[in-house]
Image: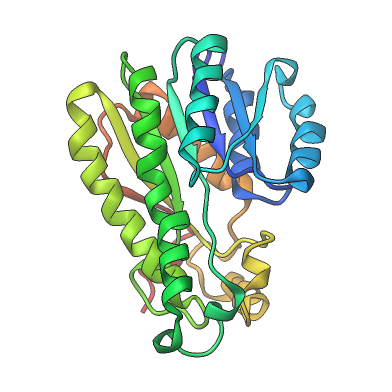
Length: 257
């Protein structure tokens, strides 16, 4: 028996076997949840369709393309979920993007278009996901998103993504207030540096990642399973009294000066 037996949920953001959302999918499925996974492009679809059957109960996984910035695609996805699941118990939002050019040099030099794109994809899409999921969460539920310490501290070369994550964390609090009366909880998981595809695109990330085991209180790096197990807790009834929070899963790195 798992803590999520009978629960059904949606994950945006599985890209490959190193992604944080894949760690979430593994933990959630292990605990008995039935999942729906989205993809963006042809490459992501190929990986998701290859990985999904390896999950416990993976043969029942719903897989559908969805760009969270496209209202028609979001609506189509939730029509499928209403038909296949009938309800949603949890949603994990892992959408994030910033132009490579805006992650180098000074934040001051961020382009207007780059700023708007980063804020739309990395922050506003959480609101879009929550709004679409609300009608399927009549019995309450849990919405989670993924954030990073760069939302509150200056991290070299994180730049506009740090600003977007700050907006994302503020959105968590406002959404938690709006959706709380319906029994829907909204929280963020702030993961430590993890060797994901997107993180590797940040200049100097490898050095920062390699430094963590020497500095973090628990003397280790964050794994995708660390994040996944936390998402399983937040999706479960065990976390029924927690909402509007940023949960740090970084081996204590955030407490350091």
